[in-house]
Length: 281
Image (cartoon, rainbow, N blue to C red; front, side, top):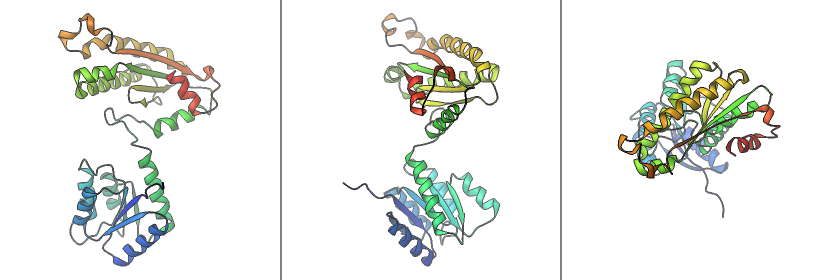
């Protein structure tokens, strides 16, 4: 069974440009929809979200900035990649587009081959998932993998993995809001530890939603490990309501902390998969 084609919505009131881009991306194997008005673009995205929007700024009704603003502020459409394709060359226009969350900004006249590559890259980033965790705003996914890949290129690195055990059970008992508060609190304590005894180039991210990864230097490793372990262990009981902190029947599935470290000397690691396996073993 053939994979579904990526869907591109072109929002362009210049009919010649719209027709040319439509024909080109159809040949490239995309499913293409075209609208000429901003309000039609918003309605189309909400009715059937495309995989990507190519958006002009100058439109007959609302401008492209307003279209982007509405898409970014709607739960159903906020993650759709947006590429501005416009005659507006001013730096202020480019900055406004990027501030609205556009993935790219291309000015006319444009090279259609370049546009194809920009579309491909934006779709690739989108399918790889978001780059930051929605609860803690820490890097995750490809950003963390890139940082871990850098570690494999030298022998002067150390990694601390901070894992929360039984968070799913905690979530089932106390709800998503309480579990998210735990993640935010752990994030804050790890950041405070880095600020107190870490280095300015230390990196904090998520290896999984419940696992924090900290890339640091060998000289800061011991102090960071001890500070994080001590602070978090002292805090675990306080995530529970007062009435539940001493209830013995809850001990079995209570939140637990696992802080461990991996350095280059624990290798050699042939690839990223080997390093991640070591961290999560």
